[in-house]
Image (cartoon, rainbow, N blue to C red; front, side, top):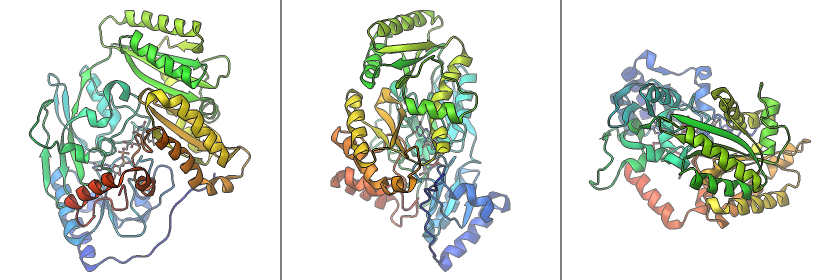
Length: 486
Ligand SMILES: Cc1cc2nc3c(=O)[nH]c(=O)nc-3n(C[C@H](O)[C@H](O)[C@H](O)COP(=O)(O)OP(=O)(O)OC[C@H]3O[C@@H](n4cnc5c(N)ncnc54)[C@H](O)[C@@H]3O)c2cc1C
């Protein structure tokens, strides 16, 4: 596999104040709270895709908000940059340090307590280092539901999810991470603690400050804890794996499923042929649920919170049957057990992993209004083919909320070098089309290092100025995750 590494080896020197700050941090946190050995720090300085390889003076693992605040204060005085880190699953190089200037990584993994669980208020107060999947389980054990769900949920942490305003598979019904938060506790770039762990659904007392930090990718402060919204636990979850006749047919199926089910659609994932091929090729025990090969699939899930959800199942069968009669669906499998449902999900969730195994790909995490997905899909793909006629399209994603991972894989028979040389042109072809259709060049992964330059082309001058003013007001010395976002 070709290396896409963007590492540039640069030299820098630490100031006397920064060297002194490192010693102070070690004293504050104690010997078990940090690491400095290069090998041990590797997992914290290289990103999930292996593209960005940075450097850190040390990695520190605070256990309390006060420890985070003490460390930040030391760094602020010495102007020593800090990279907040959760599970390091960022897709845009947001969570790893640069290699061109000194910094420390502040990993939240040891701040993993549940501070409160209020069943009647449908909330839980959790620390930033809690693994997302663990939170889903804790909610479920108390007959509640935390709907944020994404393929990295076994390793990403809630602080990282909130800092990136993560999306995932259930946005259609429950919204992004931003919409699942009632309160936040944040350590500001000067070390002050902004205490905002309110468990209120209504609170109109001026600016809603939490929204500044949700989606700020660690550039405005460190999220240390949050109050999360919970929901009634689903009683019936019904999944169908459908081969659809076209991308337009998929969108028509979404419309019908939403209206005819009483808006019970929880997930609606589009999966293209090549994604299926790659998962079947690279992920052991994967199986195609259908007998024939098709070009496009949809993983569609309906959810009921009613005790007796059988009625929804019957309605689901009717919706699928009618869509088949009308030619929207060519074939479909309706899961008959939880094992079967998980097998469907495994095809979707291994899309990213199998792509990584296959080789080089240029990723585009984009969104457009749902209604223009079919037109966008065709126009963007034609624009890519003009640049690289042998490129392969790996398209999948949360089409139900307008989000597609419109990734472009290298041609099958090598030519990888040429393909990577065309990286900027391919990006431009896709993002130009996204812009034309009123979309976003980053639907859910964020900006990080990957899209920082491009952001300047696609945001208005005024929006960029406002962002810069907020950054300067909160972090005048730019010590919070420098080189990311703006
Ligand atoms: C296989 C796979 C599938 C994925 N699927 C999705 C998906 O469906 N939807 C989606 O939205 N994303 C997805 N992602 C991207 C990624 O998992 C998410 O962005 C996730 O929310 C990041 O969480 P993390 O704990 O790994 O954060 P990290 O990667 O460690 O950090 C991400 C960013 O947040 C900052 N940060 C981390 N913790 C804090 C904190 N406590 N305070 C302030 N800033 C902080 C970091 O500095 C960095 O900028 C996927 C990634 C992988 C590898």
